[in-house]
Image (cartoon, rainbow, N blue to C red; front, side, top):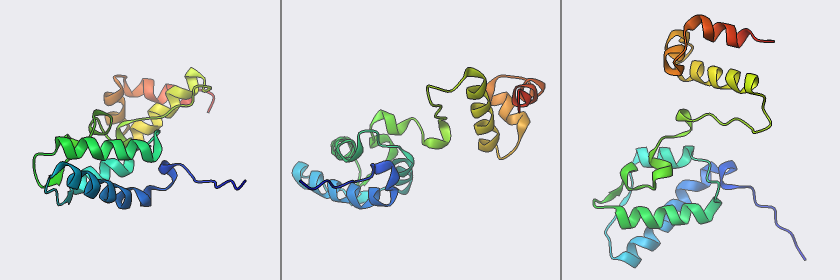
Length: 141
């Protein structure tokens, strides 16, 4: 028996466009649609997604997008809801074994990064005051 270790799709982002186009061609032909490609913004959204279902999820995504597509390019609106809602820049992942205090810090730092270091905008996004933001970041730092 030979084991082949294939890393998850989230670790092979460079493979997403190649596979997506391959699936697009397959499903466009199957559905008799003249879809020329994938819009750059849709590609970007697909490449920023983690693909927990790996290649099977990408394949299903492209099949759905082809069916939904009404133009000659797959757009963000044609993608499944999980991909329409935003890329990784709109999400923060916190491991379940993280304390609430540390989870707050992770979210606050992500908001500050998202706003390119602007702590006032980060605090506003999080619905807290700037002083609260500073205090929470200062916890056990």
